[in-house]
Length: 253
Image (cartoon, rainbow, N blue to C red; front, side, top):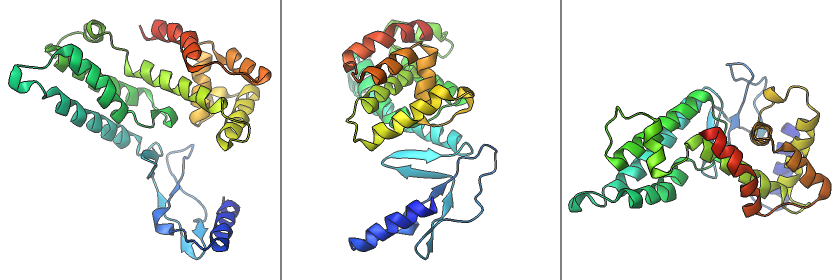
């Protein structure tokens, strides 16, 4: 990592621009609870601070100690958007559930799950998201809090948030692998795919690509991904959806 930082620093000096070390951060993803490094990274003479979380292009990257807070922030962001759209029809005696449902999936869900394609979610994180998701469904339909979970999503035709996140991850995988060969994203994805294919401990591998590959294993799609790479041709977005939607719906129900 120090060598890569040195390369970036030399490049900036060649083209006469400056990196601000205080706007950078070192985030450690440890196997154990304690996150530490032997020697802090430096950008020139400035020390890059060690942090537990960092927001990059709108996506908060964090280690496991901060993941709970990040999920809470995601839920809070989605709720604020939901309360705003749910008040549209307040002066007319209430909003049409079908309209609010459409607005929820168009505005609230993308706002709440921004960057979910590359974020890891534990079972407790997913349960928090699902609880907030069901609460929104109850409010839209005017149902009491005691309504069973199974009877909340079905009348609106909603998916669970977990199924929706899985769908976005699988679509993102296709988007990355179908990029030109010169794309750095595709090169990283292909490298991770080879590592995943020949690894004996697939369950313990971490990272966004490994999450996507594990989803392919869950829905029996990994052989299709291998076939794409071997042949060099990739399906369209619509065709890829047709392949995984049925297993996804069956699993989520």
